[in-house]
View 1 (cartoon, one colour):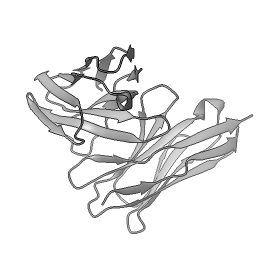
View 2: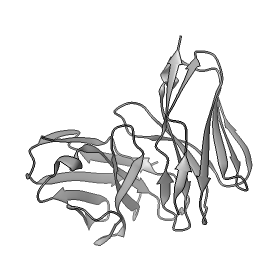
View 3: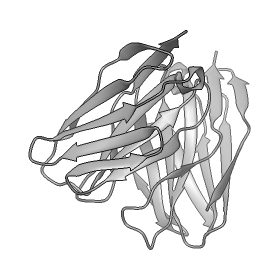
View 4: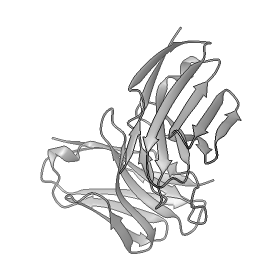
Length: 114
Length: 109
């Protein structure tokens, strides 16, 4: 099965500062990769997904961006954080050969913007 | 549209049985997932149903009725460690997961 490494685990940042969350995947090649955000007591909101290197689809227009510089690396960034960016961010991976395969999640990154 | 509902919170007693319901409305459907999420942790996969009926896996079972847009997760012989949020999600026609807000399950001794 896949292993997703995600860091940092916890982050406290001031409004207007930049952000970089990184995710790497082991145990699969050419996966579909996802960034989700989960607000307290809410469901998972899909932010970005990628089907290959350099291919990024954005689900929600906002001040965040994503990049996939390598097959098993997915980065979430922001140039200037907003208070509303606070939340629990999850990277996820799915075997591209299995359209209905399960999602494997990273450990999550808890971001607090002050 | 994308519409999926599950109860916000449920309480059950250790050793008992609990059923968590999930209803959805969608024009495209490629299966339904249940995930468990402990507080502050990432979700972990529990089950996947694409055909009608009951799938049993140990103490956990999941049921699907596609015609009714309905699924449930059944947890038997509840243990304290089962206290968690349970997330229901359906896969749409683009193979994207649409998530419910989760059901927080509280287990009392």
